[in-house]
Amino acid sequence: MLTLLVPIALSVLAGASIVVQQALIANLRLALNSSAWAGFMSYFVGLLCMVVLALALRDPLPTANVAARIPWWAWSGGFFGAIFIALATILVPHLGAATFLALLVTGQMLAAVAFDHFGWLGLAQRALDGPRLIGVAMLIGGVILIRR
Image (cartoon, rainbow, N blue to C red; front, side, top):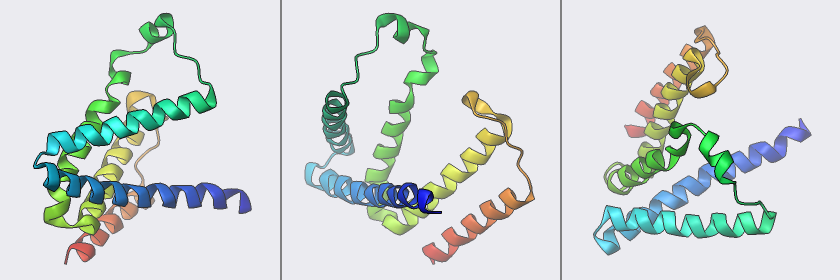
């Protein structure tokens, strides 16, 4: 159990950081009067942080040969991150942080069980069974209770 405490605590911290990020970006959107520029600044600061991390870890730059072997779709994560940031800057002020994040987690869970069930994008295939369906239903019920 002790070996799980650090990953659990870090996961909770990561979740809390999303709330902070969304509140900050929503405020930046209002100050700049632009979702696009607020999202750009979020990614720019994130890019700077990742450069510092890569330098601190002394990670070498990938070679052109390695980059060429990676499937085209593997590079598209930033596109989906941009969708997330753009929608969050617009929706958090309207829905509130709790409702937005509850709906966000619901969307993540629905997509995750589908990706697991079909083994999409190289994930191990895990059948959608009764307990998983109950978990998804409970999550949707939680969203309804939070939104009330």
